[in-house]
Image 1 (cartoon, protein in one colour):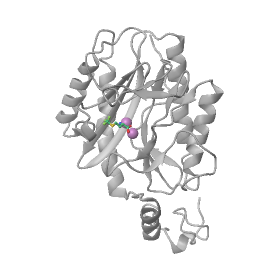
Image 2 (cartoon, rainbow, N blue to C red):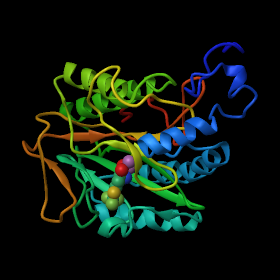
Image 3 (cartoon, rainbow, N blue to C red):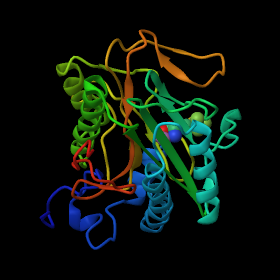
Image 4 (tube, rainbow, N blue to C red):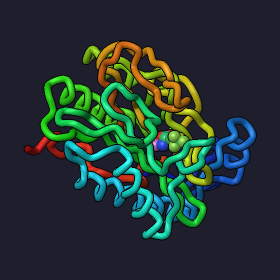
Amino acid sequence: MIGRNDPCLCGSGLKYKRCCMGKDLAISENIKQKYLREHKIRLKERGDIEAIKRAGGIAINTLNTVEEMIRPGITTDDINTFVHQFTIQHGARPAPLNYRGFSKSVCVSVNEEICHGIPGDRVLKDGDIVNIDVTSILDGYYADVSKTFFVGTPGPDALKIVKVTRECLKAGISMVHPGNRIGDIGWVIQRYAESQGCSVVREFVGHGVGFEFHEAPQIPHYGQKGKGITLVPGMVFTIEPMINLGNKDLHILDDNWTAVTDDGSLSAQFEQTILVTENGFESLTPYDLNEPLFSP
Ligand code: MF3
Ligand code: CO
Ligand code: CO
């Protein structure tokens, strides 16, 4: 418990009793202005957070439902059709559609595809891994979430990269606490991934989210402990490590979107939208990161 005379959790440097004590969320107008001015970060208030959570509910629901249709023989376009319909039916809009020219409603990235796979006629086959990245807009608020699934029965490489990547997201989330820094998140992720002989993608990062699809700040999945912007309550951002089984280098396909590993090795990704609270974090797109990875 924080005492009346302790430094306020919002980071103002004032005593708690002179600052955010008694407020719903520890965000002072000072810090709000400071983060906007210095970092272009828009801190979220309680009402914003509830709205992002509602968008997150639809995104999670979409992801959970789409999971049931994943099996060998379906195409990535089948996934897109489902995500599009389901999102609209629930009163939301799929953020990817027409975003900077993206032509589909969801990103679907298979095996060596790191992210931003465009749904099409690729057929999923037994042993593949597939990341499905859903971003829903509800009442103008955005929530961004993804998971990597197994198609049929995974081989040892598929099991390993998915397991390591999910652990990376867990490790990253565990660092989210007021007073910690953005660099702490990347640092634990990189340390764990590399300890397992895997590599961290540098070109794509987590991001502020809520009022827009991609806001400040950037959240790299690599970096140094104690470096970067200090986390304060009301920050909402994604953590979405992309981890490769081989080398970290990548290239973009001729479709101008799909990022693939240079060495053809498998790549996985897990993403949640995370709020910094007074006590630590709350996921606004929660799903279980501890369930058994593969149940035959
Ligand atoms: N959902 C992705 C992310 O996690 C962004 C996809 S951009 C798109 O940030 F245009 F490809 F949809
Ligand atoms: Co994202
Ligand atoms: Co995403």
